[in-house]
Length: 599
Image (cartoon, rainbow, N blue to C red; front, side, top):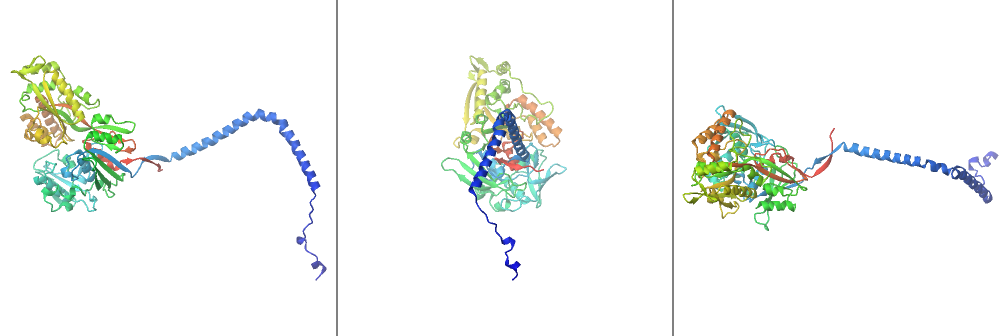
């Protein structure tokens, strides 16, 4: 090995290190002295300068904070510009309705609750939209023959029953045939003379015995039943069939189960679920509960304790008392009128002058004020706007004129009573249990008593089976005056209420009989030309006002109360009847959620 190799390489050499404490101490003292010197020179001797600029420093710090805060807010606002609040999907909607409810078969619906369930579970061929216009539902086409007696209706090919089967023309024919059979005992009438024929699987033809202008509107009230479920069932046994408690429909909701509340009489909850196969699209609501109450007062209480989040079938008086901080209260005018129906065959009201005296001696404005300040007036047998042209006006309120008419009829005022041949002018006035009707009745009775007429009143409860209002009061016409609501509908065909053929046992509760009115009513429903129909109805209206078989009091209003957390029909929606509130039920929702906007 060479000498060079024997010597260690430089990278392996570790320099020798020593630690001198005295030297370190000296250097630290020197650094300390320099630090103190600099502190005195640049900090302590210049502290007065800092104090002079501290305001500027504080302002700069504040400005920087404001800039940072503004940037944060701008970020948040910018983010919100891409977000919005939308009504939530799913959720459970609980609506109160007036019962009882004994069947879910729509052919036998007799109460408001049964009609509500029918609207949610079953479909019609035509329906009214939220604008009050007749439009398609199950139907997707509609044609009329040249003679105006045959209506051919196409049915949507994608419509399904809740069990998955398709809705077909044979279901429509089956339903009409059930209605035509008197053994069915349906609450839906008027189909006895109409023939329904299956043209093909998705087309049905309706043959009418005569021209009937209002027939398209009748299709709105024809609920379609599944032929495959009730095939072979005797018509007399349809009502009692299990279908009435476990129905299969084609509407936006399908039945889950019926809950009987044993602790309360006539209290039920109809539980329904979203029909995901509904031909118009699945509803936003996941569940719909229909809570059935026996009295309107119970509905008001249910809202008070938040047992439900919406309610129909309330009186105007009860709805106005609901807490407006928790609920939205809407009053939708419907195509119904409240009248004082004068029994033209009663001993005292056979005299036209007595009826005219009541007509001119009734302050209808005061009657409306007694019920609500927002009631639309009504003085004809039609809803305002259904006729055009020179419609007749009701006689102006005139107490003196009323007294003169009664004098001419022989009813002379003796003290505070009007008498004829020693007998007092005494009228029995009847109405059904309803706080609004009772207020109107009280005002009417007060006004007529001031004319010298003796008034007795009777308030009957339709839900009380022992009273049997139809058989004991309405059919035998056991009243002089009946304060009652008449459902007029979208079409001005009021034949059922005023034609003489409907007197005595029909819906002509006034027993009104006029050859001029009869001819006009028949002619109007047998013509489809709008101008001709309007002219005929104007003729009838003039005669009706002259004969005074009734006194129009006000157009009915359907109150609807809903929680502020739910989204239902718009306030401007037009209802032909209370059931039309479901016209846009697909879009009802409960609660809200944040969503991002689409660009």
